[in-house]
Length: 212
Image (cartoon, rainbow, N blue to C red):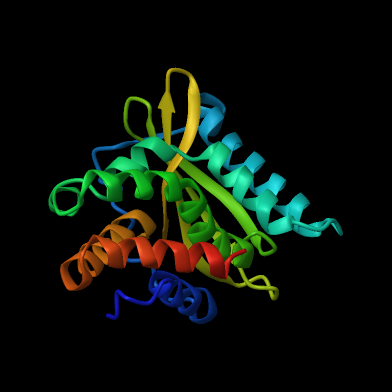
């Protein structure tokens, strides 16, 4: 796998959507509790509302739709937690204080641009929310199914939602078991190992520019 491709994860995702690859599981274990929608309520509604908002943006004729998609994603994601996680450990130890400051300044725009391309390809498809699973208190996986225009099931799309003091945030999503955040962390690791922290900053700037 070539981790230096800025959207390497989504090449596999697009193939899964096109080919209907079997779902190998998305990290939800048997001991976790499947919560009835009327009991969990908020996590599946959160996902449904986010999809509706993104569809409305895509359907509008206004200029600047990409920017509005990014704003919606940043507003609904656990940005500070993702920002820390993706460079935790050896990646951060390899950076200077100035490089970390630049990374922090770029992160919101970067992560929303990186996710936005994939979301754009999904939101106009039929997506049915199936179940909400509580992994542990306040940590949910909302499972949904993505269908082709012909009505055939093409992929399983799981949304990981975290409840932080009564407010819900998106912390990750999986297509057919592949985690966006775990794959992105692996990409960051390879970038820094091969080219130093400056290579990571260059990659972030490239993704932001591509989506501008």
